[in-house]
Image (cartoon, rainbow, N blue to C red; front, side, top):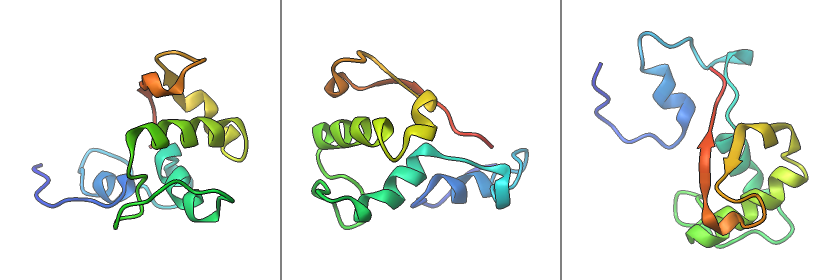
Length: 98
C-alpha cells in the first residue's frame, strides 16, 4: 500500500498499513508520540516549529535524553543511543510497539 500523504504522527501512518494491527487502544505505544505530547508540559521546553516538533536537532536529542531519564522513563529501553554519555551523537536504534 502506498502512503500518499504526510503524517503528523506515527499512529496515523500505522493506521493506513493493511498488515499492521490498529494503533487504537492499548495495541500501540510510541515513545516519539509520548515525547511530542510531553513537550508543551515541560518547565523549559526547547524551541518548537509550527508542527510542535523540536526545531533544532541538538535540542531534540538533549531534551529527549533528559525526558527518558525522568518522566519518560517507561520508554527508556525503546531508544538506544550511539553514545550513552553523549546524546548529541544521536540515536542508534529505536522501537515502537504496535
